[in-house]
Image 1 (cartoon, rainbow, N blue to C red):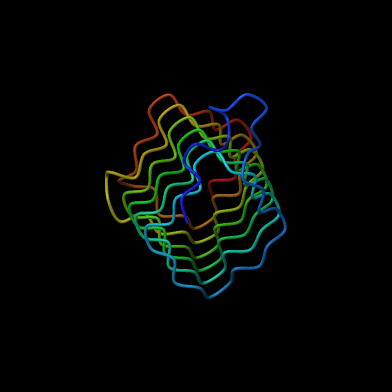
Image 2: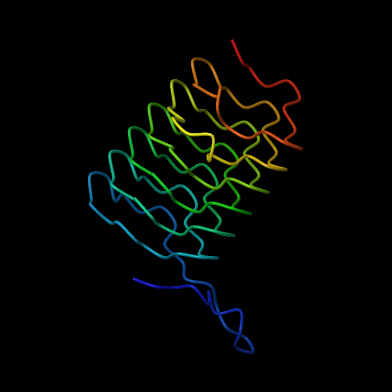
Length: 146
């Protein structure tokens, strides 16, 4: 499934709309939904290794216990998204809007997990393992880092 153009290159084109879908437990490595509308969807326990969600609207989506190793979520709207217990090794979150998202116990096992210039304001990062993640230029106003 490749929606990498998102319909934006065509006059009057529409972005792929997959809002409010439940894809929990699916194995979808290499999935490309660049620029797609996927708000309020569930990807709990999914295998999304090497997937591309760059510039996608994932508002209030859930990735609980998902494997997102080497996924690209750069520029994505992840406001209110849940990543509880997710594997986020080498994920690109650069310039993503993650305000009020939840990453309880999320696991970043590599210094290649990239939050450069991401907005993590009011995000719940309790027990998230961020020791080796890159947070250069990230905003963490009122984020819970306990």
